[in-house]
Length: 503
Image (cartoon, rainbow, N blue to C red; front, top):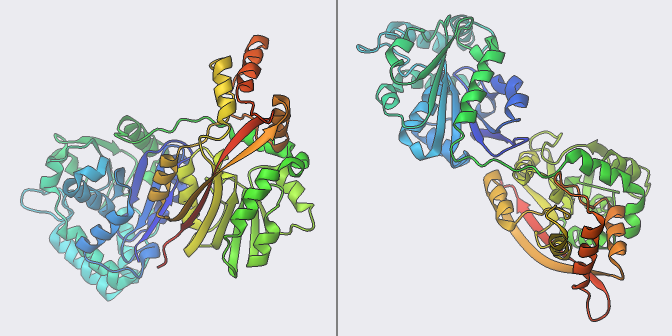
């Protein structure tokens, strides 16, 4: 099976696909991922016979079909060596899928041709093919010498790697490179022993080129600071149709707010318990492992323990975790303080993710779904409840009458969640909506309850009301008072069941 890994951005929605070279794997990019994820959703791929695609064999045409099925609808592509040749061919053949192209130490024609002298002689390439076929280990050592040996090559499945090695000779992008319509950047190392820097003279009139004077075949490892600065600057200029996320939530304030509310939470969380109980009824029996994502005070841990052999409790708020661990009736096998958008768990490691009224506090919901896909085992289930945008609409409308500031937490519309689910690879099994209406004698009673839950306004642009604005706010909320004399607070509750496809 072709290995693909998608790592969500900490900010923004720009998509970046990374394709490695022959004899390597997606691990070659690992050192740069923290930097890249500050800007992009990053998709990593292992070529056939390489890395975690070691047992995947395919023709180039089949590989391309399988690859595009797993990649974003449109993205920026960065390819190194053979990966750059593949990225260039994809850009030429499927221009609607590529918003910008970057190649690294990649020759439009790896093999020397009559009108393309700055390339490897055919005899040299054929000799390497023979060496690798006879002795793959020695062949890789020879390849390391040619590419500079900063990071050694990896021996995957030799037979498949041998087949993929032929792609270097078969792919010919000389015409395609002249017809590219998207922004393109070609990066080279001046000391490259595999792709002569003289090739820049042949493509220089066509594309943007940058040469790293102290690098060989791996400039992203030999001059990383200069290399990634150039890449990020280029990508920032050419994000194309990529969506830029707006950031409303202050996560530190979210964590601090819920930590402060740990002691008071259970005393006022009637709605939260009802929602969690309803969601827990959907749990599959005999799950080997389960993650309680946003465990809070650990209320749902007994239900998860009843259905799972191993239970992991995780929350963003350290105070909540500390309180939950003290509750002897709510045990867990492991306790983690972490972010749902960047789970501290291995790939394919849990059977069930359970999350009740937690993900609405996440900034990048697409990242939550992408991470759930990553850590779930094939066939695993993600059960969640969350709040829709009509939640606390009475507060929002009263706030509008008071001033122009934001006084109610924003909750995402359905289409944003659906888009995130679709991008993640998860399949939607169930989407159920209910409306819960809580009643209060006074507005102060409602506001105090929200504070006790830690669910008061944590938007970064929230405003402080003055005395006159507060009077308008209270008067506007009074318009919602019901015939029974109570003030309503409405919650739009969504229940979702998602599944990671089976192999």
